[in-house]
Image 1 (tube, one colour):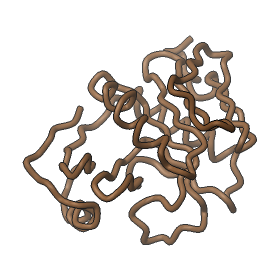
Image 2 (image 1 turned 90 degrees about the vertical axis):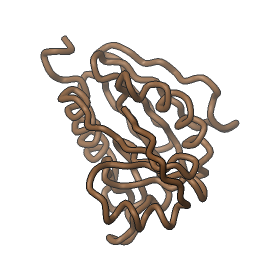
Image 3 (image 1 turned 30 degrees about the vertical axis):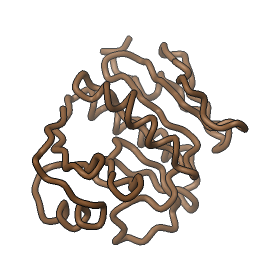
Image 4 (image 1 turned 45 degrees about the horizontal axis):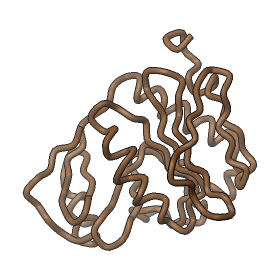
Length: 187
């Protein structure tokens, strides 16, 4: 769930402001939006996805980060995706990704509209992005946008079931849903 505050600012001002405030916030079209916490299922899927990505990617080239790290989307929007894979060459004091190649959100009822709407439009415009993943938290299912030769398709590929695999050919990785959804609740 997100709560819009009556605050407007640009990206630079927001990045300074957010460092001085408790809680989780995003900047969406110059408006500060307060983000709420997630469920246990949400946290488990985020952790497992991050671990699966770290296991498959070269740590000298890529860094897997979670929701504490931002992605700047123009002058008036900063998002904090659940998982972002960025180039490993970023500085430790950076507040936003340098060149994200994978961005993932774990969907919840309150975030579905943004995760499958505005965020798709924002993320797929990033020149470095190779894949945007939106994973369900209550079933082994993902909506996947992968950049191909002509760019991103307007509609996601839906991948579901414990035997299904998310393929990101440009990074040479396969992410089995059975690994991400490995607990008894999904069987």
